[in-house]
Length: 138
Image (cartoon, rainbow, N blue to C red; front, side, top):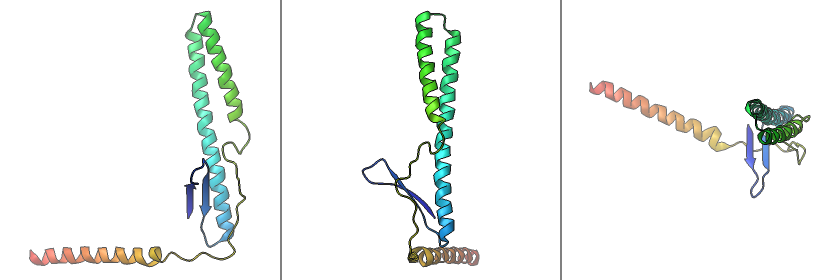
């Protein structure tokens, strides 16, 4: 199970993985980290490309020297932002604490293991009783 939660009163997020196999849990945590970083980087690269394309289109249409000068300055700013976006990973995420695996296994969640199946089975039994009763009444 993968959980992502924001740490209170901070801009940081905590990512945790619970799984009986420790190696798989570390692998999942690393995969979530790398995929999230790549997804955010790709989103920003696409946005920068769209902005640059728009500015270049406006630059081609414009005839006024002042407007062209302002647009060239904006294109230069977009190019600087694009260079920052295209850095090698990690792009957006920085690991503050290295991943660690608990020595002691965690306790099973009894509500999830017993309560949920019991609730679902009672609901199904109730539905069956209602359906059978409605057929007997007809």
